[in-house]
Image 1 (tube, one colour):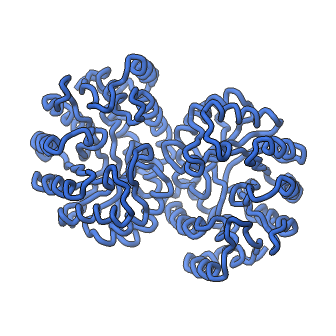
Image 2 (cartoon, one colour):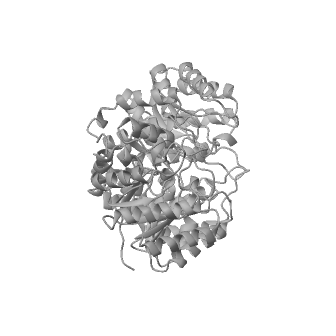
Image 3 (tube, rainbow over the protein chains, first blue to last red):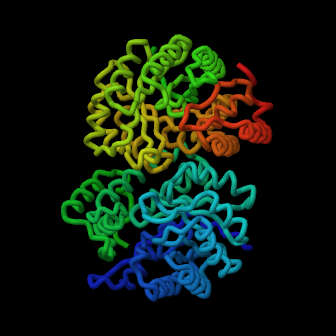
Length: 312
Length: 304
C-alpha cells in the first residue's frame, strides 16, 4: 500500500446561503484559503463542515465540487460517516472514484451497536475501497453515540490491511496510549492523528498528524503548533497549545443552541474576520446577539490572533 | 516545610490482614518502602487504598501512621472525601491535627451537584482547615461531575490554600483548560495526573503524577518522569507504553490486581475488602507471567 501520511489536515466549514443552500462560490474561497494557509491535506466534509446536516446527494456534490476545484493541489481525505453501513460504503466508493487520497469514517452514527458490529461496519467500508488508505475516527467526548475502544481498533487492524491510522478527537490519554502501545506491534506504521486541534499529548505519545478545524480562524497558530510538535518540541509548544485552547473554549461556549459543537461560534468569528460563510444549518442555531458579542469581545482580547489573516 | 508537589508521588494501598482488619504494621513498611524508593510525596487514601471501604475511625488511624512514618521526609496528603460531607469535614480537621501537609478532596460522591454547589463544597472544605487543598477531578468516574476551568478560576480567587489538582479526566482538552487557567493565576499550582499518564500531561504543564504502579515498579515510574522532564521523548514513549501495559493489567478489578501483583513482588498487603474482589491464585499467576514478560521482575526491587 502506498504510504499516505497526511500531516496537517484542515477540516473546512461548509458555507451556506441565507436560504440554507450550499454556497459554492464561497466554498471555492474557503478551499483556496486553506490551501494558501498551510493545509497539507483537506478532510471534508467533517463535522466542522456539518456533514450530518447535508443530504447524501449534497455530500457527494460537495466532495465532487471540492475535488474539481482543488485539482490535486493537496490530497483529499473524504469523510463518509453515516448510520447505515451500505450508505457509508457507497459514499466511500464514490469518493474513491473521484480520486480521493484516503477515506475516513466514524463508528456508525446514532446507533449503539455492539463492538463486533462496529468492527463489521468499519471493516466493510475499508474492504470496499480495497487498497485506498482508510482512517477510523474516535469522536469527541461531547458527541452522542458510539465511540471507538482500543479492542475495536485492534480488531480492525487485524482485518484491514489498508487501515492507515486512527484520528482521535476524544483526546483521551488512555485511548491514545493503548492504541499506540498495542496497535504498533500489529501494524508498525499505524498512524495516530490528533483530532480537535490538540496535538501536544497525541504528539508526545507518537502521533504524527492533526485534523484542525480552527485553521479556518487561526491558520498561523495551528501551523506553529503542528511544526513544534513535529519537531518534538512538546514543552515549548505548551504556550501555543494554551492559546488554541483559549480560542477553542471561547468558541465552544458561544453556541446558543447549547450543543458545545463550536459551529455557531466558528461561523460568527469567521464573519468577523471578513470570511463570511453564513450561519450553520438547523438544528444548530446561529450565535445569538449576546453570545456573539461576548465571543467577539473574547476574541478581540486574544493578542495572538492579531497576525492571523483577515478576509480571503 | 514548603509544600512542593511534583514528580512521582505515591498514593499507597491499604494493607489488610486476612480477616480484613487493618494491618498497620505492614502499612508502616509500605510507607517506608515508598519513601526509600523515591516517592516525592505520600498520599493516602486514594480510591486504590479502598478509602470508601474503611470506617472513619480506621482512616484516622492509618493517616496517623502515614504522617508518623514519613516523619517530614516528603509531604503527606490525606484524602478526606467520604460519602457524607460531614465526615469529610471531620477527616480534614483530623489531618490538620496530626500534622499532615495537605488534604485532598474529590467532587462529592453520588449526588450530581451543580457548579455552584461544587464551588460551595470546595470553599467549605478549603476554609475549614489551615492546610493546602488539593482538588480531585474525575469526571469519568463521577458521571460527568467535573471541575472546569471556570470553577478552578473561582476557587483560586477564593482560596489562597488551593494549591493543586489531581486531574484524572485523562482528556487533553480538559487538562489543558484547567492548567491554562490555574497556572496563569497561580504559577506554583501543581497539575497532577492520575495514574502514570506523565507523557501526555507533562508537556501541558503537568507537575507529576499520583502513581498507580509505584508499589510494583518504582524505578520504571521514576525513569519515565525523568525522561519527560529531560525531553527524552523516544525513551519516555517506550516507558509510557510499558506502563500502559501494566495499567491494563492492574485496572482490571483495581486495586485487587495491584495487591495481587504486590504479592509477586514480595510485598504482600493482604486481601481487598468486599465488594471489591481479592486477586485469586490464578490471577496472581497470570500477573506473575505478565510482570516477567515486561521485565519488571528483573528490574524492580523485591521485598520490603
